[in-house]
Length: 198
Length: 92
Ligand SMILES: [Zn+2]
Image (cartoon, rainbow over all chains, first blue to last red; front, side, top):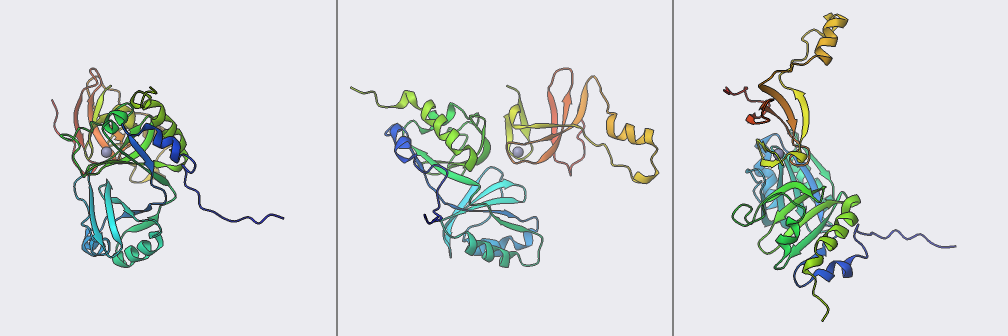
């Protein structure tokens, strides 16, 4: 008899070494199990209470994200819509944050949903990271158009993504069911940046 | 590819959007009072102008919000985009 042990597997479990093949031109890696919560907050009267819980102001401008460090460590809050945000935090914090945010919203109109399993996270950095994304993403990622702090929801090779521009890297959040497709596409699109065998 | 300016996200490629038909079609105030013919015209009948046309669009692959746009059906030129809570702007 075999015992079934529930082990947590990220959508790109087993892809680590393949993703690393594009280095050093593009350093591509999965950051699994990032805590993700969708926050709907049409009632702006609770924005201050929510900001205190997260340690970061909610981004007010469309297509941006805000980052900060609060009681739950480093947190990024992405603008997803006029009253909708995506909270990104260290792995394992989703339950804690969910109840803390619910308490902050209280009886005001709003919603907090744990969506950590919905998407996985890819980071891209290196000299050709932007060129690689440009193969399949129509949004101009040049720093003059998309500076640090940009957060866009768009398509990358037809797959819906959320793309964050951090200081030294791009973050691509992709749905779990699209993750292997997107990883394979990135590896293929990055062929020209691979080190040629000598 | 045609760019459509989302009122929130700015110009994005048309493939990110879904078309939602004519804008400003009001739901009947007294639905129970409508005859079959009136229902049919509410559900199925839409204007089909040659020129500026107010339409609903959804930024499906982006912020997933509905908004309205005035599009010239002759040239595909988008004359204005505006949020659902805004009045239709005057276009020439
Ligand atoms: Zn949008």
